[in-house]
Amino acid sequence: MRYQTTIQASVYGKCIVADYNSVHKDKCAAEFMKLKNCYLVRTSIAYSACSCNH
Image (tube, helix red, strand yellow):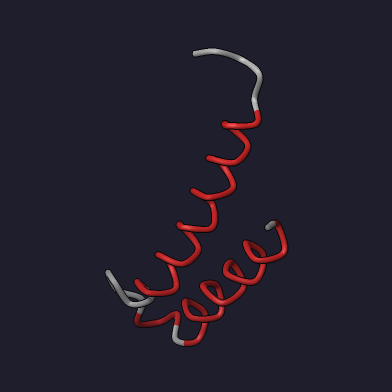
C-alpha cells in the first residue's frame, strides 16, 4: 500500500513539474484524485486497525 502511494505521489509531482510555469486549478486533477484516494485508503486501514474505541 505504501508503495502505491509513493507511485501516485510521483505521478502527481511529475504532472505539476511538467509545466510548472502554468500551474492552474485542476491542471492535474486526475492525478491528485488518485493520490488522495491512496491516502484515504491508507488512513482508513490504519484507523480500523486501531484498538481504540472513539
